[in-house]
Length: 159
Image (tube, rainbow, N blue to C red; front, side, top):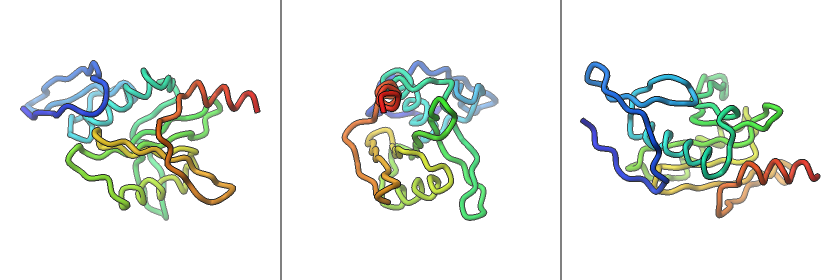
């Protein structure tokens, strides 16, 4: 049995089972059982946090989205969408023992070239970094907190 460490995230009520000696977790976004790797442990806790703390609608989120980057097929860990269906936020996960480096940010930026989300988040379950993309100024800046979905929705409807 693998031991999964406590994360710098709220505890999530995960459904876990052993299947032929393989530990699996139920991913409510994909609506299926998936192998419980350390990265998946982070993903499940983080998506729970986004839904329950930051009010991202589960119906507007997806895990393991297939994208194409420079002709290569890749998978984006989690995408949260705007109500009209365009990507709003991308999250890239790493296992808790993986340091978040510039290479990790480079990876999510490459993924965002095709999705053009407004926010990018990288987390290893212990550290979380969120940045807002400014497409007009062709830059980005780190923000101290993850934006609440309801606040984004309200601010957009007022503009």
